[in-house]
Image (cartoon, rainbow over all chains, first blue to last red; front, side, top):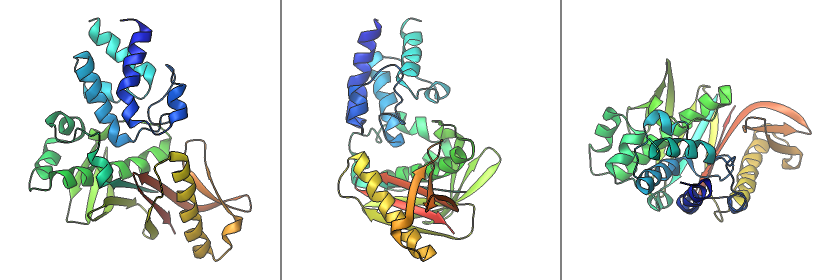
Length: 83
Length: 190
């Protein structure tokens, strides 16, 4: 999957939980979910479940702990769908 | 060290997959899930344990400044409707939880004296909520120190922890703020 396509899919997934619209508009690989997008940590697990369903993958707990930014999410997703 | 967390129960139900087993498995241990499913209050039980974990997490992240998402490393022990503790590594962190129909709020404090207050927020814009939360905390702090609210400021330090300043001087009383949906709360260690 192309990088741009992956980012677009992630954007759709996180959008309902975003509390900082400005940061969402500027979303890039360096954007963090909690720090930048102000996603409530209670919703982070919803994001992760949505990612699992969208890409048909399973994310382990130690991987979930790493998924704090767009870049980290892309790395984990790519390693699973290519693997 | 202090931390707190509030869950707006109406908000928690929106856009959340709390009903799913996979949701439980990602956040809660077997023992915690037994507690959650022990009566018909599954929804409230989930958010009670979540607010306990999150408030204890704040104490830990204040200490080292690291952002984590490791809810299963924080293990909740519920003593009764109000009191409990959260075990993280070799630490046991006491918790006080307030539950009503609208919100669940947990305060955790390693100091023995603290003041806390829950307040309603006017809207859900995060910048406005920050402003409002700061105002509530500053007002309480002004009363506590018996000074004018005009000379109190709150700034976040480099790891995002809010701190009180009086006329530009950092104060020692610790502050923790939380907001979710239409509710906010502060706790000040005194």
